[in-house]
Image (tube, rainbow, N blue to C red):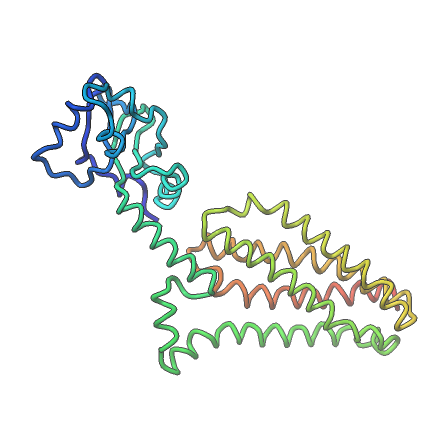
Length: 315
């Protein structure tokens, strides 16, 4: 990821804090700048403020630059992420963004066309992530028209992971054969518990990937998502408990289903956050691989949780 300093230019209009607007504008004539949308006001090497060209042209003759400049403009450090820098400029409605070091010295100005290029590139990659593409919209277009062998190469590995998960799930179910023989009703609710866990996990995963795509880290949403997963499990359990008890007339199985829903929903939320975070940290597209892998892990844990709970409460 690029930094703010990589997009900053020092070849921009500058004025001293003691200049008038007339003097500052006069220095622009006959010179070629990388960008002339903002006038940078400095006192020595330290940034004092910024003036848009529109505001400078509207100022009366003889007006000091310090009276029309923005004395508290948004600034970023040289090492600031380029997307973060662009968003700072957009949120403050500035046509240019100053880059200053820790001592307040002016290191350059990011012109609006460069910020626009950063935002457009970020938008392209974000849409690709949210759509589950490899890395960008260009990659998505390529993937949509690629040959059969390439299609197999991109899809088959994750499906093999899913197949392996299905076989492991069969082993888990088989290990509880004696419990199923004692109470076959337990098997009726396996698909429901697995589906609810997958649905809760998918919602969390979508929110996490969207957040990562716009710079929202896992730490900012982790506690709220975990709490949301637990509450969703509790609400679904409260709804399922009386329905199962009334329709199938087995209170023990109803309690097992309810407890399993709470535990499976809570754990699915954690998995749905952990896997996209891990893919993101490894520099991989979280939407491309974390979804299939999260589904497999959630399914296996949901089946295991349900049968363990059912064994403890029913058989």
